[in-house]
Length: 192
Image 1 (cartoon, rainbow, N blue to C red):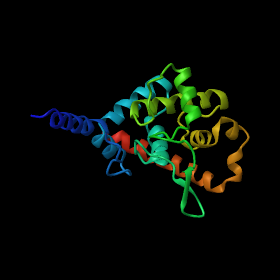
Image 2 (cartoon, rainbow, N blue to C red):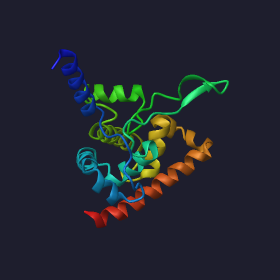
Image 3 (tube, helix red, strand yellow):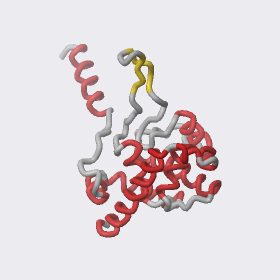
């Protein structure tokens, strides 16, 4: 076998192993179905719940809103004149849609330089870290998905200044996150 052929086969084998499964689970309305299809999600979210006190259903509802459980989710592109790509709307990436600066703050504070936003264990740990701090600094209950989402979306300063009150669409989205969290909590009682 020639060296070129061997190198090509090796490259193909490595490429097929690397990418990861970033697609969404099939049934996003059923918490049990999500966790049956992706058992690693349950393990990651339970670890975050133990470490940070953020319930699994709050994590799931937030991830659903942010990325629909797509590991490599990104914000849409902005276009000039409707056709010229001008970059993405923000640096948000991964399951948690963490922004570059906030992710770097998390990595530094938690000494997690190797953490990746498209790895569910790291994404849920990030959410736990962020929401736990929101709870401590702003007095938001760890189980209040609606308020946690508003602080997550607007940042803690924006939440404290009630910037969301000028965004009726965001208040509605947060209410939907709260309702989804409740549904997921009810479903999780029966699928364990």
